[in-house]
Image (tube, rainbow, N blue to C red; front, side, top):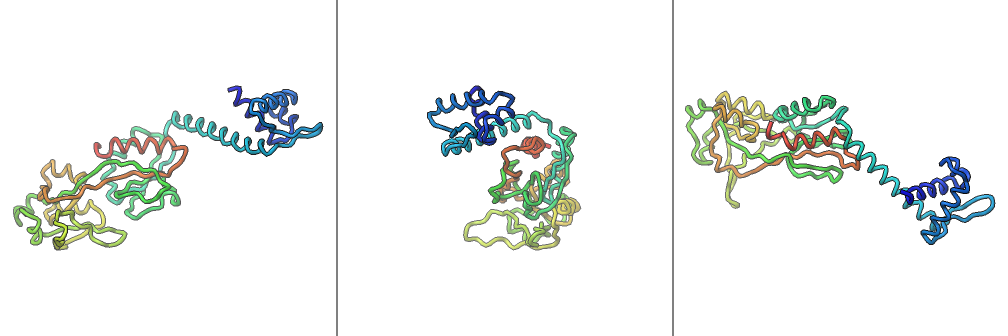
Length: 295
């Protein structure tokens, strides 16, 4: 700590270019400043100031040392701020971007809101690729690999798909025993809102095998209508398992061809990279990682 005190005296003296003004700023005498600088120079083995009876001037070595001292004190200040933020309670407005299927995340998000009542949630639902930093989001939840090096990321969980229909539908049209049987069934599709393309059903196939052509009965740009249409017996839908787990457990939807589904998706949460992670973001990232697929 004595060394840090000497470095602080040096920085003030270098910036004021006067032992007298440095002493006034620090509440000590100018002679005390001069003696502290003499001891520091002796310990370092270099001259930090050129002295005359009227003024002081920093040397080349002193200039180099001043730059390093500024960095040291900047790191100390950052460490103190980081610690104080870690101890601070999460509060304030939290702006989050979720995919259009984000309503299915609401059980976890409402749990977060109960756990952290001082955090005000601002939710934006879209499947487009938002610019997290330029658009002022605190965090976004998306599938796929992150491509922005300015962002930090954490995997929230992995998920697979299931082909589902209602018992009434299967009573009318039969249960498909192999993927090829799907060509005679009514298929409900998810459409990417950003491109208008249909999401492919992740059916297993050989490398040189052509993908199975499926009928397109109806489509939707969000998942909730597809869940509802499948429940009403209007066709088969291929949906992420986490979106329909409750309907399957309650018997409202029946899963088929599970052994012929090959993909595993992954949800990630991304947030701006920063030396100081705000408590509200830190709390949200940690909470969603622990609760999204358990809510």
